[in-house]
Amino acid sequence: MLGLAAVLFFSVTGITLNHPDWFVGEMERRIEDEGRIPTELLRSDAPGAVDGVSKLEVVELLRRDHGVGGALVEFDIDDYECMVAFKGPGYSADAFIEREDGRYTLSQNLQGFIGVINDLHKGRDAGPVWSVVIDVSAVVLTLISLSGLILIFYLKLRRGPGLAVAIAGTALVSLLYWFGSP
Image (cartoon, rainbow, N blue to C red):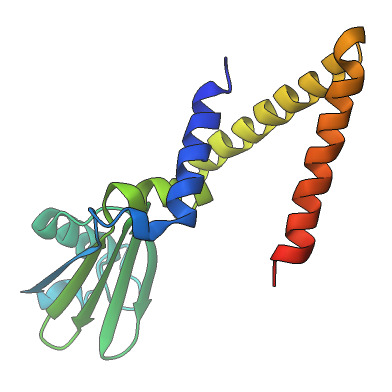
């Protein structure tokens, strides 16, 4: 029972990943915004500033003014522009900031519920805690599979048919992979 939720989650998301065209109700949504960041944040000698940019204040301003979510994954600085990128399950945001006058464009992509669960299935941009959830789920599902396989050896009446079905299933999946994959 411990692995039931994991089996259900990874089964459903396996279908949503394999057949994205079946789930057209929640298509990707794109939000475009513009704004201005105070230039003193982009040309600063304040403590914590990197290459003259107060990164923390810039990130917090984008989060506060536009509801930017996800984890900060990139903050590139050159002489003329800053590029800030955020990612999360089913979400990404990119801001391009002109250092001279503080003007920026922000593009947010929201992929909806299906995009979120698909990214969680793959562990994409989900963070270290979710990585542990995937690992624990894999271990639990492996133990469930192994316990079923071991259990068949102790059930005298079902041992032969059970092993035959297990071997046939393994052979079928192997053949489908061998002849059905490019």
